[in-house]
Length: 423
Image (cartoon, rainbow, N blue to C red; front, side, top):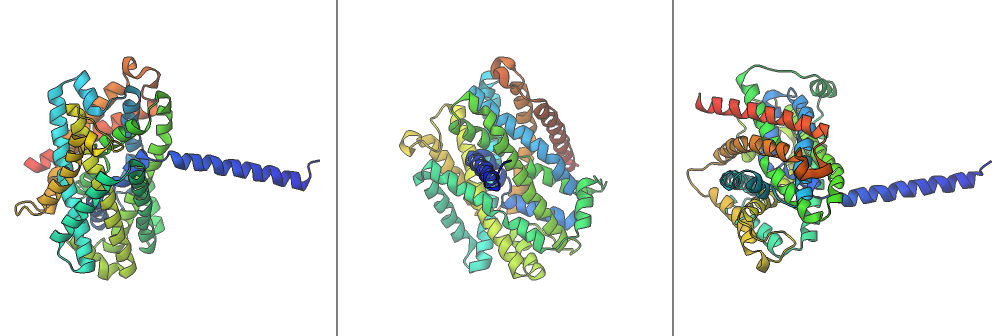
């Protein structure tokens, strides 16, 4: 018989081995995890909070449905980039048309710049509430701080900062717990789909799914995976990072909807931007909930703005054949960094234009994203199932089913969006 000490040593060995494996898994988290966190930018936080405030818990099941769709789309884009060694613009140019690529990237850049402006405005609005300083001066300072980090920071340092910011967004889960929602209602609305055929519910669903499935996330993760993973064999490492990132993204969105539903549903407030949302939340939810909300807005903005600007810079650089990469010196990739930093400052400048409001910026960026995402999913499906390009790494059945489903959903959303726009 084995002695107790031998059993103890065996158990310790297995535990140590499990800890070592888990540490290795954590070390592999990167582009997918960062991408997931960046998907919950300040604009998205406002959208999810408003969805909860206007429709209660009734749309939680849509997030459960969208999670495998996001995993399939992001995983497909990342694997294409690693296997081919090419970005989405390069692949589109090679297999389809340069004109299509330029149109696609121009649409992405415009949508991203509008979203950057809205996100920077949200950070400044929260800081203005806290500090009392005017938002316009804070916008300049915040943009300059992010630009300094991008230009003078090393890629590994920037990656660690972005991963750290992504992890800090756990404050929204804490906020949802503090809101004390009805657990029975939460579970019921998560597991049992409920459709409401009224205009307000449909518009909220459009906004939520449009915010969840965003084109810039595909560009960013694909470019970062290609930059980090130099070997085709590493394509199989993408899956866990993407799964963790997308589940984390939707878990945060889930928490935001719950908080909005528990605290603000039925309040009758017209919540159009982050400033109104924050000022409404503060007296209703209390100082602790407001502090968590404010921290989340600031952190998510600092995470999302570099990702939005970076996806724009990668896309433009790859379209015109410029040298690119965040591990490349500024002197060796001037065009890439000019677009990177320029996108942030142009986005900040949109907040100073008298004819462009934050609500308008969010609205038109959503329209542009709505036009672009079905095209990107269709191209991704065609390329990822082309054995001449992908070899043994063609799309899995899971990726094909949920990416195709996402294509149909985004086409329907785009159709409804334009119908409501022109009606």
